[in-house]
Structures are given as C-alpha cells and as structure tokens.
Amino acid sequence: MKIKSARVVVTCPGRNFVTLKIETDTGLTGLGDATLNGRELAVASYLSDHVIPALIGRDAQAIEDIWQYLYRGAYWRRGPVTMTAIAAVDVALWDLKAKQAGLPLYQILGGACRTGVMVYGHANGANIAETIEEARRYQAMGYKAIRLQSGVPGLASTYGVSTDKLFYEPASAILPVENLWSTVKYLPTVPRLFEAAREALGWDVHLLHDVHHRLTPIEAGRLGKELEPYRPFWLEDPTPAENQASFRLIRQHTTTPLAVGEVFNSIWDAKQLIEEQLIDYIRATVVHAGGVTHLRRIATLADLYGVRTGCHGATDLSPVSMGAALHFDLSTPNFGIQEYMRHTAETDAVFPHAYRFEAGDLHPGDAPGHGVSIDEDLAAKFPYRPASLPVNRLEDGSMWNW
Ligand code: CS2
Ligand code: MG
Image (tube, rainbow, N blue to C red; front, top):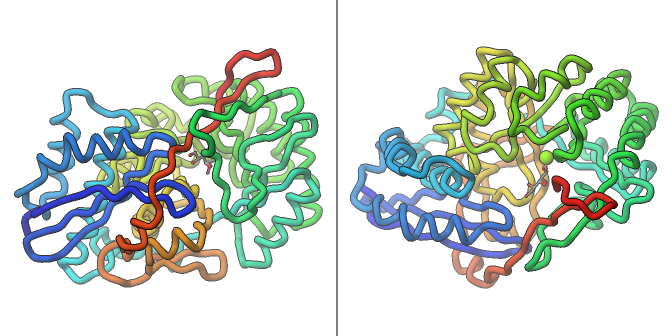
C-alpha cells in the first residue's frame, strides 16, 4: 500500500480545523488532525511545503519508519508546529493500517482493556451559583467527572468561562484580545467553588479544575492544600511547566493530584515530571504530541511511574483527534480520564464519526480505522477565518501567562 497523494483541508465550521488526507494506491484513505489553535496556517504550510512531497511513494504501512524520518530527519526538531504536522501524518497512517486490516484502531493497538472511556465535561458560569447549576446539568447528562470553572469577582473575564455553555472557544479576533488577571482575586474563589460544589453535588462525582498556568509554584502549593478537603480529581496546569523541577515545590505542599501537559509536544517535555513522580496525569494529546506513535511512548514511560493519561480534548482538537484519542484511551493500560468538550452541530456534520457518548463514557465505535471521516464538499462551505488566542496582563499592565 503506497502513498499516492496527500492534501491539507482547512475548514471553519464555527472554528478552524486543519485536516490531512492521505490517499493510497489501493484506494484507501486515512485522516489526521493538524489543528494548532491560532497557528493553523503554519502547520498547513509545514505539511504542504515540507512533509507531503517527502511522503509520496512511501509504504503507508511503515508507520514507525515514517515517524522517525519526519522527526530525526528534520534538523530543526520538535516544537508544536513540527510535532502537530508529524501527528497528522501518524494518525492518518494508523487510520490506514486499521482500515487495511478491517479493524477498529483500538484492536490494532492491542485491544480494549476497559469497557469505555471515562470523560469529563466542562461546567462553567459567571459565578459559583451558575457554575453549580451547570454542573447539575452535566450530572443529569450522565457525566461521572466534571470540570468546574467560575468567573472571578472583580475580573471582567477569565479563561474557561463562556457564554455558550457546551462549546467553549477562546480564539476570537485576528489580533489577540487582552485579558486582565489577578491572582489575589482568583485564589480564594476556587476553594469556595469546591466547597459549594461538594455540598450541592455530593461525593459521587469527580470534580476537576484548570488553573491554566496562572500561579507561581508556592501559590499552587497553597491552592492544592486548600482544595484537599474537597478531594478534587485533579488540579490542572497550576504553573507553567518549562521548569519541570519547580513541581517539586508544589508536591512538598499538597496531595491534590496534578495534571499537566496539554501544551507539551514531546516526551522530553514530561520526562522529569514523570520520572520524579511530580505529576499524576499527563495531558499530552495525539494531535500536538506527535501522534499515536509518540503518545504511546509517553504513556509507556508514565506507566512505569504510576502516572496516568488525561488527554487534552478541547473543541480546538477536531473530531479526528477525538476519534484517535478514544482508540488510544481504550487500549492504554494506564489511561486515567479523557477531556470531552462537545463540538458544534456544524463541526459534527463536517466530520461524521463513529464515537458515541453513553452514561459518562465515550466509546470509539467499531468502524474500521479511527472511525472519523470528512465531508469535503461541506467543509468547503466554511472557509478559513483568522483567529487568535487571547493574551493576558496583570492589573499593572505587565504581561502574564494566558
Ligand atoms: C484548556 C483548553 O481544555 C483545556 O484544559 O486549557 O481549552 C485550552 O485553553 C485550549 O485548548 C487552547 O487552544
Ligand atoms: Mg487546560
């Protein structure tokens, strides 16, 4: 089965998605997601200008060799653009291999080792009461795990809080919108939110929270400690993770489980965090961390140290990524949880898929491959629209992490 052609499809059914389609001489096609929020065209160019020409004529079954060719063969290794491009090729090739075998991808990856993939949904609101009302909606839909994000009194807006409750999308204007941040205002709101949530929702539901890289390590330690009585499932991205050793400080102060890595693109970003058991969940994803091939390597390392997976699954990851992630989740022994933000009806129509939600779990379905396709005629009706993620400033005007 040789690669005959490949092309990049950019579409915007509500938000931008970049998809790689590989066609083989046997007539089979494979799909990979190449979406990098706010940097879509950089990946599209990397694929069209540098990757696709090198793929033509190669054996589509040689997934590992093609991965090594694109990774080792690029003198300028790693980085989100390169690794997202490699991921798109890798996922499309796994899709092809499974289709060639006539099997759902999870069977090729070793078979199911659980009955379903536990997911968490996003409950958010302008204040604590509204967030809890939303969380009740998620509970009623059958979710076993819910992320809680609430507006902060005194701050005009914050990440994770949207007007459209099911489809959060932070990328908007051509140039980044500027948000204001105050750690002093934020810090006391989270324990209050969790206290109210436990009172209203009980203890039979997992509760999660995303700090979105906003704290210093010692502030993160304090927040983790204050949340311990409410038994959070995890505290996500409490601080930026370039300095992996800084998580030692957080660990010294709290037993609240930590989840990190949605922005990671390689095993090297997480090596120390995993080997020193500084985190509990690794959030790297198929699309931004080099595809199924590389994510499996990260998960295998994590398994040695009791770290479980908790893949990123925001709406900027296309249904193609969600499909591939679910096959990975179902067949990975140290799977922990999968993030699941629902896509809009337009997005679901552009990407028909076999995965389904049932009683708090997603299942990838049993269609051959990863089970997600693209309706290219419909995709063409939604042209690309430039959009950027926001930036963040402190109240005195200095730049902060968004
Ligand atoms: C967030 C994301 O899902 C999450 O945990 O951190 O929504 C993140 O902000 C976006 O994926 C950025 O594109
Ligand atoms: Mg996050």
